[in-house]
Length: 213
Image 1: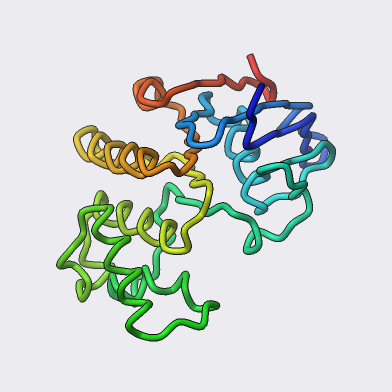
Image 2: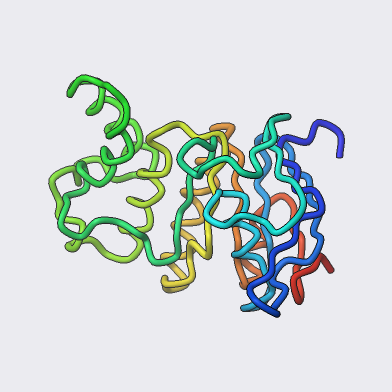
């Protein structure tokens, strides 16, 4: 693909005798809203985790913006991940959860709060700063997870079944937030088994048995 921003080139991954990802090549444009669609066990989440640095491929290469990141640690990649199970800290409030991603940056309290406020504004959680994370609804927790992913200004947001634990109406609300994040110019890659969720993205690639179909 011309002007490819993300390039997954001949990537494979096996777990023992099971091939989860089988020689997949995919290109994604900068700013694209892209989805990997397929049933459980098709390899889509494994591929997303390889892109995010949470799994290392057994073969192939991953490039972002012309840089080979195949073996780069997750925390050094220009990506952040949003998980189906939210992966937020229940003992921290909303503000503390979002600010957690800034812990390695030497920022003043004022600078941190400015970034937190901006991220919460984007996901429509203004005024929830002191709310306990365990007091939030499922949809609010997912928006909180998105805010935490946004706080470090990643080039790419990777969303693994971001609506999988939500009811239909809340799923649509969360997808609208993700669409607005994408409209800010951030490349978004969504993994889903739901066709109606995938249909909200700009381009869909279907996976089956670890390969593109």
